[in-house]
Structure formats: C-alpha cells, structure tokens
Image (cartoon, rainbow, N blue to C red; front, side):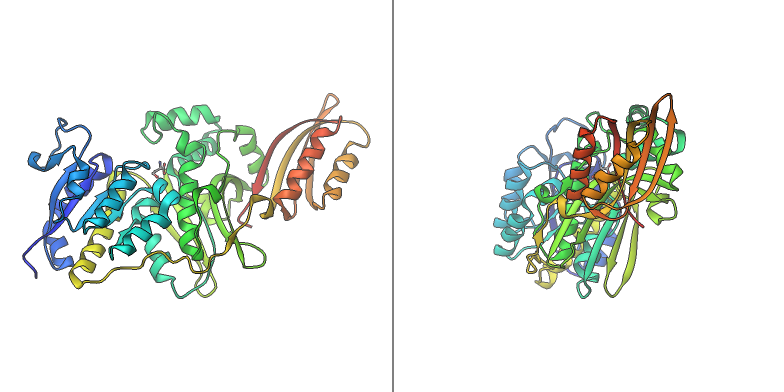
Length: 429
Ligand code: HSE
C-alpha cells in the first residue's frame, strides 16, 4: 500500500459534511485498505469557524474555501455546501488546481452539470455525485455503469423523503396537508422553509440528473415539468382509496412515443396500492428503472439525512481515490444521444378529474361531449348527487396532457360545471 496519503478538502461541515469527516476518521484503516493508500482530511471550509466540531482538528478549519481548493496539493474536493454559488466556482477552481470533485449538489448539477463535466474533462479529473440523488441509494453508478450496456426506457420514483413523509401521513391518518406538514417539521423531516421539497424543486433537480444519465441526453432543471404537492387534499386521498390507489409525489423520466425524445416531470399522482412504490412509507425513497434487457429494477432506501448521504459521498470518495492512484478517470458526461426533451403537453397518461356540477338532466352528456370533442376517452364515471348539486369523478383512458388541458379549459366554461375540484394523473398501471 502507498504510504503517502491522498489529501481531501471538505467544503461544508453541516449535517452531511460532519458525517463524512466522522466516517473518514473512524473508518480510516478500512478506507485505506480499500483504496490502496491512506486518505487524510487536509482542510475543512466552513462558514462559522467558532462552532465546536467534534472529532475534527481545529487547525484544519478555515473560512477561506477558495484558498483551500487552490492549494495545489489537494487530491479530492468534497463539496457538501449546496446551492449554486460559491459551489460552482469552487468546483471549477478545484479542477483547475488539480483536484477531482465529489459533490452532493443536486441543484448545481441539474442546472450546470454539462459545464461542470466539461471543466472536469478539460482538466482530466473526476466529477462524482452519487449523493446528489436519493441519499444513500446507489442510483447514479448503476445508471452510469451497471446499465451502460442496456437501454433505459423509464425511470419512475419517489426521490423526496419530506414529501413522501407528508403524503404517507395524510394517507394513513386522514390528515390535511398543513397538519401533516406541521408534524414533518416538528419531527425534523421538513425544513423551516419547506418550499424546495413541497413545491417539487428538489425532486425536479433529481429528475433532471437521472434523465440525463439514463437517456445519454442533456436534461436541465428547466426541462423538467414540475408541480408541487401543496394542493393535495384529504378528499383526494379519499378518492384515491375508492380507486384502490394512494397518492405519491413522483419523478417520471421516460422515452416519448417515437423514441427520439424524452420527457421528465414531477407531480403528485395516484398509483395503485398494488404497485411497489405505494408501499414506500415515511421518508424513504424508491426508484424504478425499466430497461430493455434488465426489465424492471427497483432501488429503495433512505434518501436523505447526514449518515445515509455521507455513505454515498464516501463511496464516491473511494472510487475517485482509486482512480487517482491508477492514473485513470471514471465515466464523464454521456450526452451523445442528444434526444429532444418534449414538453409536458406531449406526455401521455391517465387522469382522475373531480368536478362539481349541477345535478340536472343532460349535464353528464354535456360533460362527456367535452371529453369526446378533445379526443379524451373516458374509462369510468362516478357521480354522487345532493340537493341539486353533484360531484362527478371522471377517470380517463390514456390521453395527452395537451388534450386533457384543453378538456379542462372547456369544462370550466360550462355553466353547469361549478368548479374543477382536482385533477390528478394516474400512473403505474
Ligand atoms: N430534502 C430532501 C428530501 C433531501 O426530503 O428528500 C435532500 O435532497
């Protein structure tokens, strides 16, 4: 084994960073044996230097992250600060000064992944980011390496633990969104500002990264259609139950009709209780990958939290260190397929629509005509009337999102339709 250690700079020492440092220290001998050389924590860049950080030598702490990545003797920079800047500049600077990079930064990779990969390649360095998607669950490496010889057609999953916790609470207790969110906040699952999670930004960034790797095509955050889950109600769960379904916030990336395009989207959807994703409870994540040769694969586990995310970071650190020792680099960006990313209107799926209507002769026929005029075929209709008003639940066969949007716009214009209570896609059938 080489005795000269590989030097690691840690950018960020919060929930994930402190776990990375702890595991590097407590598992130092095993890591050295697996890599073939010791790894040494050479510096830790933080915002608040006065905070006590157990197990980290205070001389390693610095507030000057730029100077740390410019040192020139750093082999690997581990970036766990998140956000776009200064992370982007620090990573680019690290490549320029001879380091490879392990990052957990989904927002940055979803926005600027191509430029970061180009910077890594230009400097003959590695960029690894298993921790950016679904915490401890191995997904990037299976897609990038294990399935590199297969053709992935679909990636469908629950990639946000906070929202899965909230939806699971609503499902199991009948609670409303706010009540379930409050519990998630009290238990530490939801952040004080839960916007990134509940509005689907976090999941959309992960969807962009997964779609890019799965389809060998550049997919950016802006390409991902996004709907949050703040409008999901207890009534939606009751409707879902009547259909033998539950509701999950799903990230869905798939090849579109002609195979020359792909779509990527995040939105709440009903899925049958018999679907394996329906049984993913609490803050867990799970991702289905469907490929030509492999068939269906499911990846399941903790998608967030300091220790699980650190596990993914450490796995990347070992891989990158091994590459350094052998003078190799791992897989870079693969975007050769350059498929078109189609808009949401092209997505074809089923829909569950709840309407409040007047309960009088001809209303059902009127509503059915609007669906027919837009080429949307109805699968089932359920009506419950009370005092001259009725609630009408229509479930459609597969139709394009554009056709469904046109249908709903036309329904809203009918005098007999008092309101569209909810529209939910039905997936996983
Ligand atoms: N906030 C995310 C979640 C974890 O709840 O899954 C980090 O991506």
